[in-house]
Length: 218
Image 1 (spheres, rainbow, N blue to C red):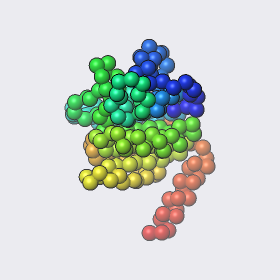
Image 2: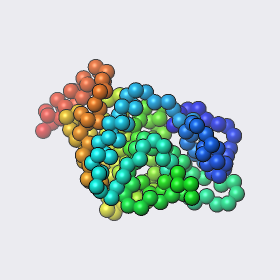
Image 3: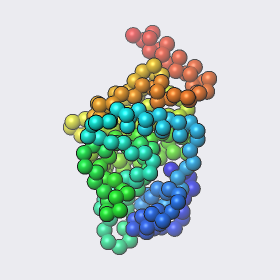
Image 4: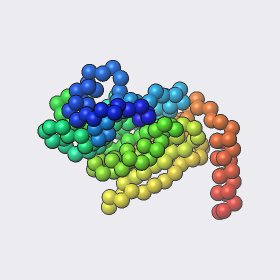
């Protein structure tokens, strides 16, 4: 989500009507409509890399991937009238297993993602880690995995829902490592996630220092 926003307040119904007629994508949060941020080449490459890897690994399985143009509702069922409560967002990549559940007959707002992946940038990171993540946890009961993928350094933050409902956090920041998504039986090697991405020198130096500290502490 970018920092540009509308200052008028819109109901959920008004937002959806506007969005369905718009050539641009906008996200919605509690009555306010936000312009989607333009993406950098790095952001686009990472999204394509992950979409390709995950969709290929899901061939023949009861799960499927969607990217960028599928909205997700993270909020209550809107009541009649000027209901403004809720988040309507466009994840960079999501996975659904089994039957697709939608907000209404338009079939463009999904209710049951199992995995959501966001490629974070300076303009979106605070929201993706904060309010958006709170809404996802609260309103998406079928969500099992939330991934935050950095585009400035080889790093993936992984939140995984345990059997009892609590969330477990893990971090993968070794370029030679892989992240396992057991819920959908997919493996994400970081070298493939970051294919064609050239990191700043300081980013790789920091990784080398962290690796050395980890080896000495063993």
